Amino acid sequence: MHRIWIRCLLLVALGAAVFAAQPGPALAAAKSGGAPSSKSRNALHQFTGVVTALDKASLTVEKSGKQPMTRTFARHDEMNVVGDLAKDVRVTVYYRDENGRAVARKVVVKPATTADASR
Image: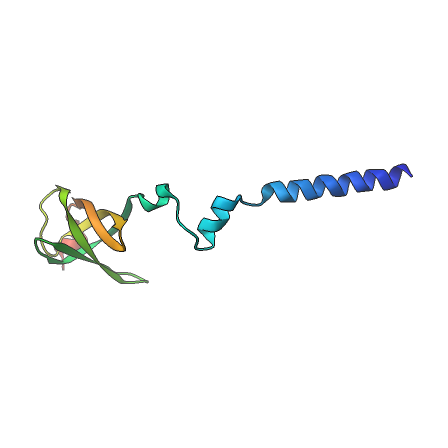
């Protein structure tokens, strides 16, 4: 009889451990495509590549490699630029997603390397 009670207690403990390990409702909603939390909505993202187009309202950066990608960023009124921003320079853009648009908040120009100089 004791063995049955011990097995029952172990099953209950195991069930409680499995239940405790599952994500809460807010995390589950975020993972399932539910409404994002305010923290993730205001998160600052980054994208590194070479500037291919530049004007007063936007900045286009192209990343090469195994998964090439081009992103266009709207320029924020108070955008901070570190270095000389120009076409064909390597940059890291720090941006936020605002109403479905990527808005650049900070742009850091990367120093030219010897590989860049040989191109």
